[in-house]
Amino acid sequence: KAEIEPGMDIVISSPKSYYIKDGKKIQVTEALGETVGETLGNLNIDLSKHDVVTPALNSETTPGMNITIERVKKEVQTKEEEIPFEIKKIEDKNMYKGETQVVEKGEKGLKLSTIQNTYVNDEHVSVDVLKSEIKQEPKTEVQKVGTKETQAQAAWGGQKGKKVITMQATAYDPTAGS
Image 1 (cartoon, helix red, strand yellow):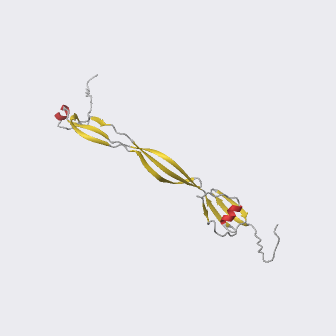
Image 2 (cartoon, one colour):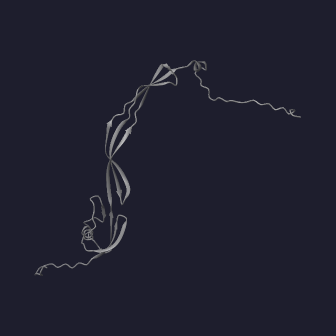
Image 3 (cartoon, helix red, strand yellow):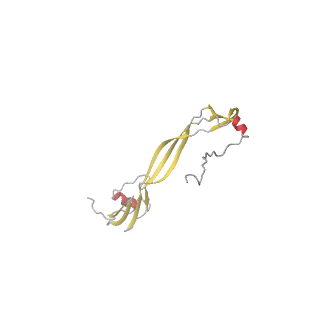
């Protein structure tokens, strides 16, 4: 216990009433504190370094004040992605049209990305790519493609048939069976 001495300042405080929205929870409470930060501390409300408080923590409090805490959570993860390979086609006059031959097989590449997901009050609000690096470059596939016409293609003058229709002919005889 401290004794009262001459020249000493004595402050008598009474709790103030506040409306606090903490994430998705709303509460009406009374607490002591000259600033928003002191008030939340006196209410044992812990904040993370990413949480956003409105009004600011150093703002003076007033009775009936609305205090909003947006709970911000950030998650960082690494993601692997395949990079498709390209196909380079080389015309070959010794191969028939429609024929292809793989000369060099293509290989997919690999990309590693470090991403950050941000959640506000447990709702996903953003995805940010923090870092992206290619671990393995894709290897281009090389294919030979035939250009030589077959005898049938040459006989048609290079034209292709559009549609084949198979029909069956029937006859009608009105005197049959009379």
